[in-house]
Structures are given as structure tokens and as C-alpha cells.
Amino acid sequence: MALDLNPYLQFSGNAAEAIEFYHSVFGGELNKMTYAEGMGDDHPETGANIMHSSVSVERGFLLMASDVPADVPASPNGYICISSSGQDAGDDAKLRQYWDGLSDGATINQPLEQAPWGDYFGQLTDRFGVNWMVNITGQGSAGSRTE
Image (tube, rainbow, N blue to C red; front, side, top):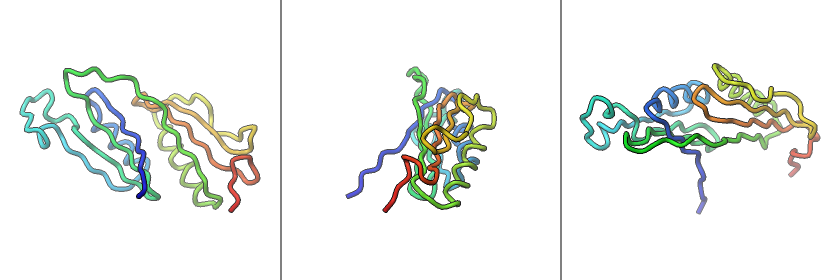
């Protein structure tokens, strides 16, 4: 049996906007359920908030998000890491596409550039306050895989 470990982000009222942004970056299949749909919440302030959402992307990447209930404080989001283990141009191009999408409205903490270990690496904080690290395996780098 395979064990999945998926990032689950929590927001304070803007999860719908965030998950739609991530869907525009990563593509894949978008699913959303509001508190009104899932819990019968008929309060105008909270019913439209996201109870559960997900973006399912090729190669097994699943990103999930929700709004915390109104009486629960949202904590700051942690780090999300994307790392390429592939060696072909398609992997490189896809990760660079993700970087470009996530960069829209982001604070670039470390530009995506060649790192001392030979990979291309960058860090950013996206418009929703989520921190991302992107590592693209370079040919002949310490992170390269040979099988």
C-alpha cells in the first residue's frame, strides 16, 4: 500500500481565491466544497468559505486547501517544496512554468538560478503568504539521479 503525504493549506476566508490561483498555475483537476454545501452553513459571512478543496495534478501531486472555521485562528503557512527527480527537458520546462505562475504577485526571496550544487533553485512567498522552494535537478549535479 502506498502512503500519500499531501500539503493541506488553511486560510482565513480566501481559500477559494488561493486554490483557483494554484489551479491556474498547476492545471489538473479542481474540486471545491463550501461550508454551505458540506455542513449546511447558511450564514452569509461563512457559508461560501471553503470547507475542502483540492487540485490534483499529474504525477501524483495533490494540493489541498480550506478556510478555517470562523472561530479558529489560521496559523501562518509553512514551506512547500517541489523538487524534480526527472532528467528530461519536460520536467525542467514544467517546473519553470510552475515557478513563473507562482511568481505572479509573489515576493521573490531567492531568484531561480543555478545553485552551487548544480541544480536550479529558487524561493518565493506567493501572494497568499505561502512559501515555496523550487529545485530543478541539473545535469551532473549532486541531486541528479542515476538509475
